Image (cartoon, one colour):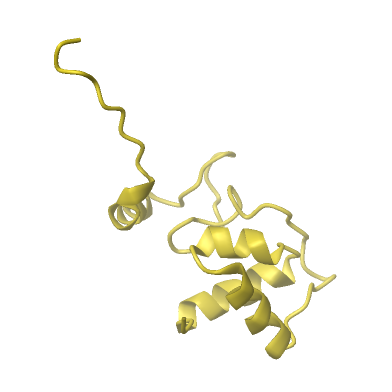
Length: 102
């Protein structure tokens, strides 16, 4: 799978902050081996000058990967990003089916 330019930028930003390959992959909805291979081939390592983060959720927006400056615990930087992310990730929605007779 080919990475687009925005994915490459987000991978570089998150890896410099010390985020693990698997967490970067989960955050960007990519394969962990693709992220690891990209980082190793391009020499992307943890940057000690950057504030270290272990979990990207709550630090960067799930949709655009901008830093979240709203309240703590937010996953998105704006309502527009939240709507766009859920529009493209409909399979994540858990629907509970109820019997018609109940």
